[in-house]
Amino acid sequence: MVFSKKPLHFIVAILIAFLPLINFANTTVDSTQVKSGVAPQAAEETQTHAEPTDVKSKIKAFINHHVLDAHEFTFTEDEVTGKHYGFSLPIILLDNGLQIFSSSKFEHGEAVAESNGNFYKINHHDGKIYKTDASGTITEDEKTGFPTNVRPIDFSITKTVFSIIITAILMFLIFTGLAKSYSKNGGIASGVGRIFEPVVLYIRDEIAIPNIGEKHYKKYMSYLLTIFFFVLFLNIFGLMPFGINVTGNLTITFSLAILTFLITNLTANKNYWGHIFWMPGVPKVMRIVLAPIELLGVFIKPFSLMIRLYANIFAGHIVLMSIIGLMFIFKSWLGSSLSFGLSFVLSILEILVAFLQAYIFTMLSALYFGSAKEEHGHEEVHV
Amino acid sequence: MQIPQIVGAGLIVIGAGLGIGRIGGSAMDAIARQPEASGKIQTAMLIAAALIEGIGFAALFAS
Image (cartoon, rainbow over all chains, first blue to last red; front, side, top):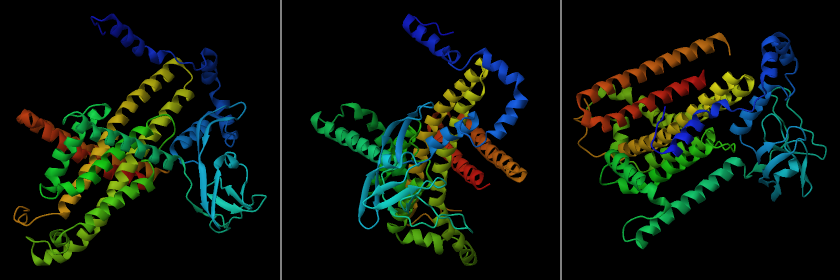
């Protein structure tokens, strides 16, 4: 028990400790139904597989809504009337000129949108926009099952793009504010950005300088700082209930890994390529054997960066959403409150994972930059 | 999810768990020997754990 001299702290601690027992799921009526009616319910579930009113398919739809990209923000959806609460994002297509219209014309993927005489429809299976005629026919190829309609070039602002823009504006405001506060306050930071000063110093002193070295670290600092805070903020945004999942998206992490790959290989000096193809300190026969493996490593290292970040964040989201969904499958007070507690603890673990993955991405990028700027005199050290 | 996929996933978890467990164990031994170096050891342990987890996740997604 938490006995504290301040009674307010004690009361707040007790309230939070008993929070899992307050859940508004249906009470004993439903729990007895679950126990006795298991067999007919199982049959019913297989029959109503296509309908979205089944709890398991609703949970799948909930997970998909959080994890997948969409052309509109949906905060909640009224089950009875089907009204969506949220806002639509603009759709920007390049198809005989620039077509810009709001995604509300698609009416959540059901209607055919019309813009300057062109008709577009979102395909249900892959969520992409295809050009159709007025009735919205999408002809599918028999062999592969993919639609054969023309796809316009899609520059739309989807949830992911919107989140990236918001994060960029947020980072810009925070860090320019922090930078300006130094001049106003005589060398000491002031304001909200103060919390980021030790983080920036940590990245410089513990990540950049040990890995890249004193001579060259300054050129890479801007990239390392940007990557760290970008990945960190996007990971944290993914944990909020708005359905923003940016770093759990393979294309986003692919772009970040490609940036590291390009910077490593374009700013590398001769020693870097020497270590890959003609490594010193190794017998000459071995060098011919090792060179293809090292060349493969050049591509696999950024690939592993991409996969690591994507898999950690994506798997975390899926597990968390599934456990939250588990709360609605158990309709008893014990199962739901245990699921709530588990999802709460898992969310805290996800915050740790968010920080750790941002740190690991930055650290490994610094390591690769360090190997790109390697100086002479290391060969005898490698045994 | 067929049986080979499930067996493969189990093997991957065993491998990743063993790897990270060994690293954690040697990190604890090192900290016990020299408590003042615990910051550096912790950092190195987290880096190694994240690398092993990266392989684990990549293999899980491929299975």
